[in-house]
Length: 210
Image (cartoon, rainbow, N blue to C red; front, top):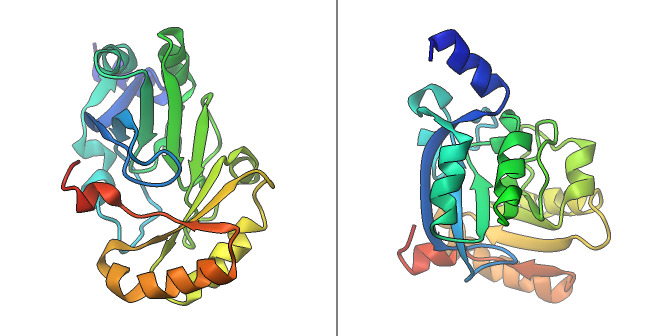
């Protein structure tokens, strides 16, 4: 395949810049504790200063990988795939989710929602960032809103974002890992006063698994 052909395949979503893929337990949010196959796609320009996978930001560092190969590997491990990043919606997701669903695999995504919505998702985890807000379609699609709490101002931002999702969307507050000891008491107090919110923890980090 020529470089031009490869670039065309990436532009169409037939190949994706794959950073890593692995079978583990979902560590966060609604499905925490459940087994799933994670597909981490390279490329992100949202630029969260506390991001724990900054190595995902530069898509050129991650080899374009055919979606058929990605799905074949996923099928060996699980009937649930979580597509994450980076920011996966930077790339067309329809070919990947079509291929996954043809194999009977449930499709989940973790996204900032900052790019046009593509793909067919059984579970849509939206985690908005102040630097690049979600699209209207992302708010409408969200099954789960996961707000990262780094400081006091983030509670206000969380409420602003919660006002934009559907009434059935499940609301989570999650401490930024480096600030967890400082912010957890604040979060517990906030949820006690605002019980429509739930607390999400990065349990995979406590369990020392990927």
